[in-house]
Image (cartoon, rainbow, N blue to C red; front, side, top):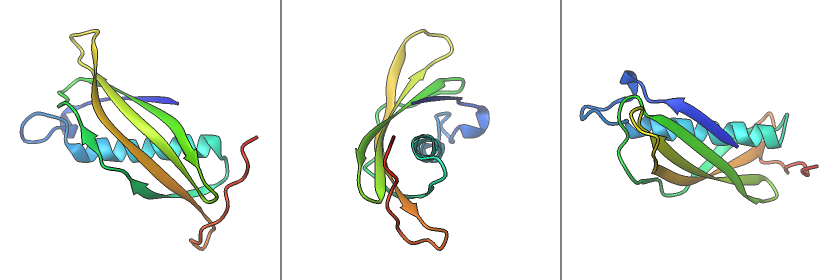
Length: 120
């Protein structure tokens, strides 16, 4: 799945670059959205995020593209690779900005792990 967002003024740190916390928020949110698209009506919580790799700084006005690919499915969890590219508004060239994997766990209403339904 692919998601996009725009880097706005409120997303910048004191150096004028994208604040890493926003990137992590979007990655977590878009991995969750991919999971509920794949598994409708399943309750998920984020279980883990692999080592986050910020590969290049991102400036104001950049369009971020989040490519979210299901990597692995377990009994109670699913892992997505998230690759983020950035494109500055003044350029047609995209460049890699961030990469990680996010694991989400299926839970019951009382917070206990439960098996994922089979994809059909």
